[in-house]
Each structure stands twice: as C-alpha cells, then as structure tokens.
Amino acid sequence: MSEIKYMIFLGCVIPYRVSSFEASARKVLRNLNVELVEMPEFNCCGLPLEPISHELTLILSARNIAVAEREGLNIMALCPGCAGTLKKVNRVLKEDKGLREEINKHLKESNLEFRGTVNVKHLSQVLIEDVGLDGIKRAIVKPLKGLRVAEHSGCHLSRPRKYIGFDDPENPMVLRRLIEATGAKCVEYMGETECCGATVAGINDKISLSLVREKLSHIIEAGAEALITICPSCHLMYDANQIRAERMFNEKYGIPVLHYTQLLGLAMGIPPAELGFDELRVSPEKILGKVGFISH
Amino acid sequence: MSRNEGVNPFRIDPKFRYEVVRMPGGEKLLQCFQCGTCTSDCPVARFDERYRPRNIIRMVQLGLKDRVLSSDFLWLCASCFTCTDRCPQGVEVASVIRVLKNMAAAEGRIPQLFKVQLGNLVKTGYVYEIPESRIKRREMLGLPPLPTGNVEGIIKSIKGLSIMKVLEG
Image 1 (cartoon, chains in turn green, yellow):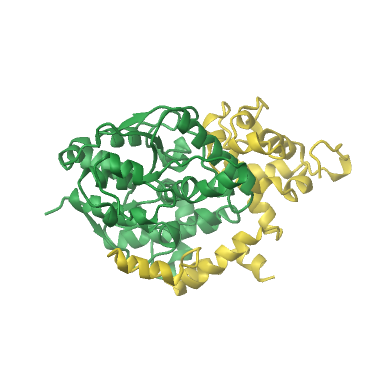
Image 2 (cartoon, rainbow over the protein chains, first blue to last red):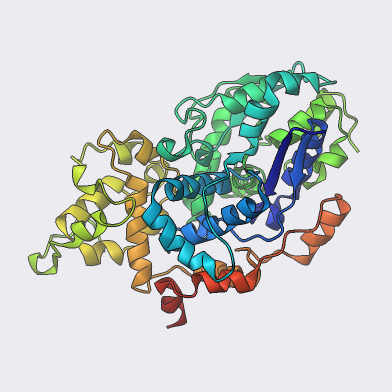
C-alpha cells in the first residue's frame, strides 16, 4: 500500500543514548505511510573513526550500502552524520571505479559488493521530498499555533556542500519549512548555522560547552520557547549538556530541546509519552501545557 | 610546542606537502593563499587560541611535519566543514586536517577515545557499548530489536588495514 519505503539506518548514537528520537520518528513516519525495513545486519557508518582512518570509513560505509543493495532498498538515516557519510561514500564509490574495486576487495570475503544501485537520504530529506509539505500538513490535527521555536539543522545535514548537495548550508530552509508546517512559528536568531560542538565533546569540554552556551544565549535573545533539532548529537549537546553548560558558566538557560519528530508528533495529536518526552533532560512541561497537552 | 616557535631548517621536510596532496581530501592544499577565511569562520578557533586552521595549512606547506603531527591542536577540529565550504580557493580544509590526523594515527598518535571506539566496533559493530538499560527502554517504547553487527564480516573487511596493525603494536 505504501509507496515510500526505506531501509532504516539507526547509527550508533541513537541506540546508545537517544531512543526518544527513534521512537518519535517511527511514530510520525507510520502516520505518514512511510514503510521502514530493519537492517538484517549493521555496522557503524565510520564517521566517528574517520579521524584515524579514512579508508576504514570508506569500508564501513560501503558495507552498509552493499547490505541495502542486496535487499534492493534505498537507505534513510535518522542521524545526519550517518546520512552525510553514507552519501559521500556512495557518491565517491559510484564515480571512482578504481577506488570501488579497491574497497570491494575488502567486502568480498564477507560476500558483500558495492555496485552503486541505491541512494541514501536523511530523514528530513524523505519528509520534504517524498512525503512533501502538503502531505505533512494533511496529517496535522492539532496545529501548534502560538508556539515560537528556533531551528538548528546541524552541520552534517548539508556540509560539505560539494558532497551532500541538500539544503543550503549558509541559509538552511528545510527544517524551517518542516517546522512551519506544524503551525509553530520558527524565529530567526544570530549564528543559526553555528556548530553544536559534539565532535569535540570527548576531547575538550570547554570548547564544546562554550558553543552550547553561545547558541542558547542567542535563542533566548530571539524569544524562542524551544529549540528544534533533527540530529541526535546536536540534541545531546543542547539538551543533556545544557545542564553541564549551566554549571560551567553559572547561568540558567531552561530551553527545552525537542527532536523535530517530537514537535511533529504533537501536531499529529500523538501523546507525549509515546514520543519519548520523558527522556528529555530540560523539562518541556511549559510548552506541552501551551499546546494543550496536560503534563503528567 | 608553541606555533610561534622559530623554524629550524633541519627539521623541515620539503616533501611533506606532496605527501598530503596525494591523499584523498588533501589535493588542493597548495592552492591556499592564506586569506584566513577558515580561521575567522571556525567555531573552535573562537574559543581556543591553539586551533588555527590557516596556520596548520601554512605549517604543512612549509614542511613542518613533526610539529604538526605531534601537536594536540589537530584533534580539536569539530569537523563542521564550514572552512571547507567557505574556502575561496577550494581547499577542503577540514579534509586536510583529517589527512593530518590519519598520518598522526599511522605513527601511533591516537587519542584514547578512538581506541575505545574501534575496540567496540570489532566487538559489536557499534562504536559505543549499548547499555542493557537502553535495550530495556527500547522494549518499553515498543521499538524493534537493534540490528546486530556482523562482527565476523567486519573483522574480515578491515583486518588488512594498517591502522589495525598500529593498534596491535
């Protein structure tokens, strides 16, 4: 019945710490008739290990793409880091025959082969290109009128431009349009395209938490009531690490951070409990009350 | 080591820049004319004065191989790719930095974080150790079981890589 069908790629960060993103994404995608197929086998896309070996990343991504090819399905990744890495490797191996042969030598022993027959998209790309804004608006039963939020698309959704080719990294519009489809107002703020700092979090907390502080201050200045993300790592930085930033700088931000799929789920009338709201570290009670959900 | 330290001509490797140019992502290194767009737009550089992408590129062009590869500032790059997107000369700055990190790693200079992640990968397919509480929470939320890693297949695919030997040694 469903015409939109993808193999879902969860990555590592989501299973490790961000179940709320996966739970809410699956709920809204089901409402939008997007059919998801689980991966029969999985490994990390390779992005976290690219600093130590680019070749390792090529092999790890190619393995996942080859699994999707074997199943005859395109990939939809929830994490923009995974999506960007898989897209980049997919593109490089489709174009460079010599490199593809080289990488296939590594895949052969486990009976996998990269052939270049499938595509990779991020969740937001499936939403805006396959479902479409009209399709999303049709599924909305409880428009979030009066809610003012800010968007943070994250770097890997569109950078590097040369390899990703989706949205405009200097003026991201996709998440903004998706937010506005729910009826909420998406405010503009200073430094909208600035990095969350997640990749340096394990290396240098001072830098990463300074970036969190800067982003949240700009959002508060713009009068937003919540921040909306579409990446599990950005979400961890602004939600879980918001408390750590408050401690480090002795300030109070109190900005709830929602996955876009949670915001959309609310507008679809799905109860917050089913969207993983209990996992949020910064209390969303105020905005839940505002959009008419009684907090528990 | 300070980046302002004088240059010792005997510690210069004039071929270093060509090594970097031959690596995927390093191709455009020699096009850099030191405008500084990368550093002025770098989110990390705003908060840590040790990290200056323009200086790193220049050090590579000058052949300061040891100083670059043994530095700790290399590992501060957030991989946001803002520098790559905005470079007027088409230098993939973030990828040059990644090439340098790969070279440092090949010499055995690898932050502990990556060793742990690689260890997890060959054990489960995931770079993080997924805690039991998360598996329980998945069930509670009605999520399907996690896809399993084909550990045997992963090991077969990557065992020949030189990075694996570095980690054994």
